[in-house]
Image 1 (cartoon, rainbow, N blue to C red):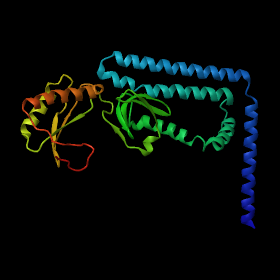
Image 2 (cartoon, rainbow, N blue to C red):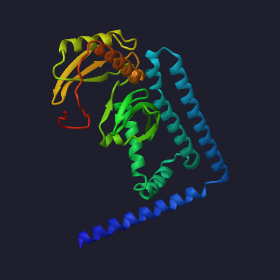
Image 3 (spheres, rainbow, N blue to C red):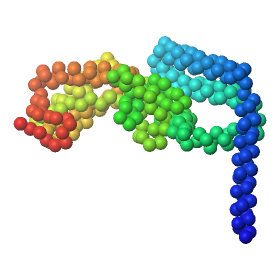
Image 4 (cartoon, one colour):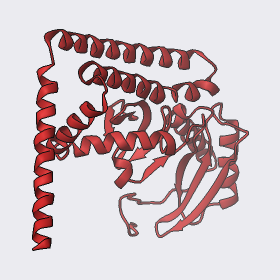
Length: 291
């Protein structure tokens, strides 16, 4: 009987708390006036304008200053956006709730129960975005691969990150992908990012000559950051020899222009020495294919 009485008491207490919370919430909602709604709309519009101005100013400054400072300036964007959004949220709460402990507890309890499941993914993305500010798996200006998407981070919002792909598409990816996806970051805040350029040859080519040409091509490119290492590695495949030229452009933005420059000039040198390519090679094939 004591256990049953205790369970009944707890159930009754929970019911009383729920009723009290609902009553307090109703009283708060009844205090919402047209004037407060107008003020809230004005506050939201002001916050939106401020965010747009901050975005444009930071991007404009980053493109005008010395390029080695470009990424560092852009990395201020997430913090400034978070500051504006946090301030706006506090002002709105104060407008409708007066930020008294009783009002906050009343509304928080009701809203959390009613909307918790509906917005769990949205909340997860916001939390991941806040965590991302400190763990920094990516920042504005970084070149990242998230899932199957690769590109430059151009915007870090409170819920999602936007990346611009090499095809000039803008893709929005929720921050909660950091819980489940591997994030590949090519430059992590640095101006340079390694570029790997592949070349394919027949088995009987002059290996030392190929290596010499690739080193020379990288060293003489106007895009190459000579202070960073240039490496040539080789692998034997069933269809022939695979060479990888690993080097760094002065600016990660030049990744594809740089790779094109290396490829064109290397092929011109290979042609002069009449180096043989594999007779038949399908890069999508896992096996060997020959005539």
